[in-house]
Length: 340
Image (tube, rainbow, N blue to C red; front, side, top):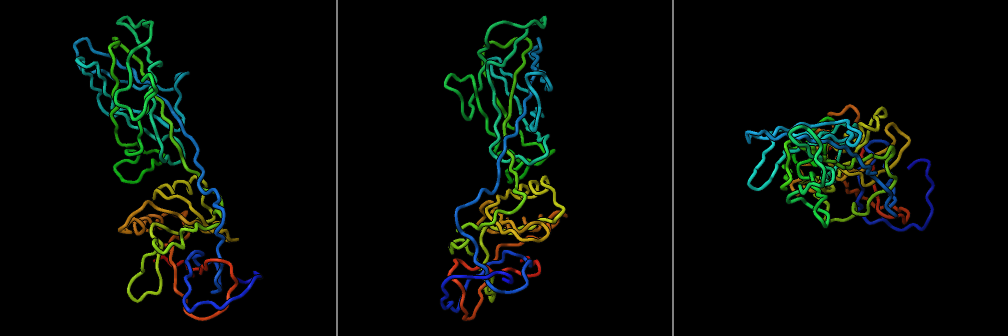
């Protein structure tokens, strides 16, 4: 690389060297550059988002279906990044004392939510009213039924929404403005009254893509078990489930977060350069043995105006004998924003 002085012992280079497409055109020459494979740097920061909704349930004297209404903005239940809704009629079975509520989560924040996302029911938050709308004293025995986890006394129940996080898609990310698929939450007890208020709280996480790429590469890139041949007659391979991504210089933090989350990506490394966009991010996608996810992710990301370049992480075979310093695995930039 121009402007860089190398030090250290030199040794003959084998006739075949593996070099990687990382820079996507940001370098002019073809001299190999050794990546820094050391202590992993923090790549994606996870922060907590939360929200809360009260559901008022009114039981008809004629034993019809209960009437359910969401209540927001009360002093004890505020909506922040997450809002809980019911998109269908509630179901009550008087023989078992069971109330089933179809819950969907809406992301009312500005960042994509990623696993883990959970809804919490606390039996101590139940408020009961009689037919005259007077508060009934005493604790309720209404508990969460078949939760994913619960406290030892059963009064706190947790329901995970990770598997239904994305609306009608396999990607586990909830973008701003989207709602999850429905999950039924069931409560059982014997102290049901004419009117009740049930508090459900939700907690989730959202990822924050670093403003600059982490200036390191994961050692797993050199694992030949993750290498896939580009095709017959092509001197190179690509790394399964990995892409390289460069943002436009005008990309905002919210756009970066949303773009990476849109493909369920995780930042695992990168290189920093003094160019528009700050450098190149190395993004790991969910595992896909067919490699179709890489193609669909690249096609999707190319449509974003905030994306300057995106490509598979390609390793090229460069033939020739030359000397190089002893500085680890060799990488070679892929020029002219080449996407394959």
